[in-house]
Amino acid sequence: MGKLFTQPVERSIQPIIKLMDNPPSQPLIAWDRTKPVDLDLPTLSKKDALKLYQLTKHIL
Image (cartoon, rainbow, N blue to C red; front, side):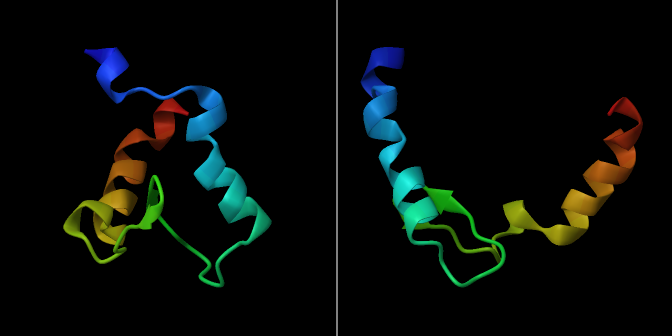
């Protein structure tokens, strides 16, 4: 199953290299391979991220 979804490192790292060579102007971004992800998605909630941090910071 893994072979269906995996790519060689040389190929999978290309979108990251492009972003590093040509950084976007936004201070915070999220990408899914080659497409930007909407930061307003509920799964990227700042409030939830802070809550998770508060609950787990003692582990770090």
